[in-house]
Amino acid sequence: MTSAPQFCTFFLDDLYFGVEVQRVQEVIRYQEMTRVPLASQMIAGLINLRGQIVTAIDLRKRLGISDRRGPNQPMNVIVCEGESVVSLLVDEISEVIAVDASAFENPPETLRGPARSLIQGAYKLDRQLLLVLNTAEAVHVPSD
Image (tube, rainbow, N blue to C red; front, side, top):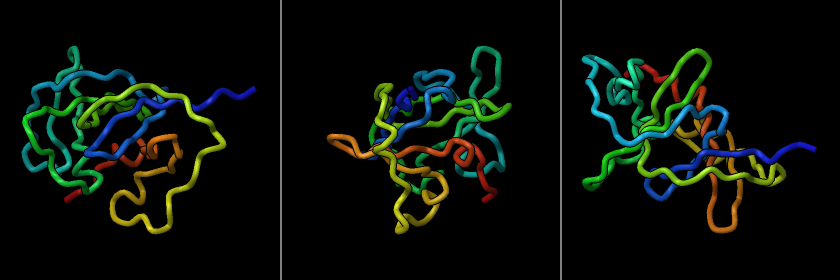
């Protein structure tokens, strides 16, 4: 018997994303960041995670979504990709959910722009669409 895939879920605007739970180290509130001179605009800065220096990637900029509005600070989804530990800045953390593997669909052919390589696929849920983030691609930030 195969187990149902589980995802740590979060929002960017009204888009609902998920990262496989086995890739998530932890989820933490906003941390003060140190800017990195001459770094890509997608790099929000560096955070100190209990003595470990972690790069924080602005997932909105990485996906080509408009800038965050309002006073709320982003949350950090700390993911492990290979030997790297990276923070993905998101608007709001949701929950860990299990989904029916048979509900998985490939991304639509009409998906364009940066999101094309960053979305692995989607699950149709009762009330919304869960977009599965390709963390290997998301943590690889191209040069500006």
